[in-house]
Length: 59
Length: 312
Image (spheres, one colour):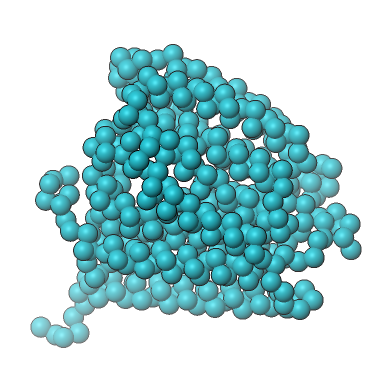
């Protein structure tokens, strides 16, 4: 029997590792996007952006 | 299910799939949380950067998933006994209880810290309290000790629109409190209708649902009483700026239907219910799902109309 033979366990573990890798890549992308969004609104600040109503009254 | 499979150890295996771990987060509950939080955020009178809004909703969803994992860790023993929950990852032996606890705690801390950085301290504090309320107050304390478990515990499911609102405004207001109250008052009739036709499950697990401790007759009365409380709460939203014409039409129709369903449940006895296999109770349960979804859907549509200038 070849040592390289695929078992169902290998498939599940590959699926788990792939899923986890994709989740981590997604988190990195979200954090990058969030950072860009926060610094582009007048410097990074924790909390909601300064009040800006949907009708633009805050401008 | 055989005794052998029921008695499987919760030690679990080490070859769980990605889907098993994802199932720990209760994706269906997460989808409701995402939807109501999104509505809370969209209905707020403050515009939010789309990327911040997306990240905030994501962290709220992760927080909800974390509390789901903690609930599965704590409730593995009774989940194993109930047909509805026996196939969850921990009781099914796919994921260990320790892994569920680790994932729950890690995601709880991560979601709260990230929401704090993304949207501020108020939504983060509300999310932390929601996780604590669901995992500790509801799962560990109320669920196994009082028939009022889902009345008080319902608060945990009612927080997401408040958190969404706080992401945009940085605070709490009458509108967000009324959205909270809508879910809070909706929860008892929704779960008690389910308990009427799933009573055997709760009885087997020793969960003191109202149907188990006080019987179905009392539960039917309570469903009607809480529906009567729910109607003015839903209508009260009409007095706030977030409710528009779509909400007005939706809430009037749905509340009439819901009230009619609650009266029908109240007028029935067990002989009638068993004769048609709880047809009215099942139909009321389905209506309750539509009730919540359509109310929040209507708020979302009204928010859209307002932002497009179609309604002031």
